[in-house]
Length: 131
Image (tube, rainbow, N blue to C red):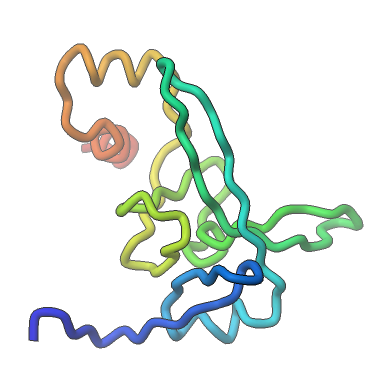
């Protein structure tokens, strides 16, 4: 049928009442860590933008660090960014994650709006790959 998939999904707890969605094959890697949910709140162009993300506290080189679930699952290299395709930070299935270029600067956003570009992120990704 249209809604069946060969990839099974799993839920991992991220707070007392909330769960994050991951692929079943990522469960053995993710289950040993204790995951938390956080929300960033920023104001852009007089609008409040909320970004939800999942993280675990880990010790790296003797210091406490934040391991983000989406980066962990996508094996994202340093300097790159992980985008949730459906804009849902609680959905960390591989099919919903896309690794692309660095964060956009305001000039890039302004250029996209001025020239009515539908997907500036795809354009940046293509330019990195030499397209």
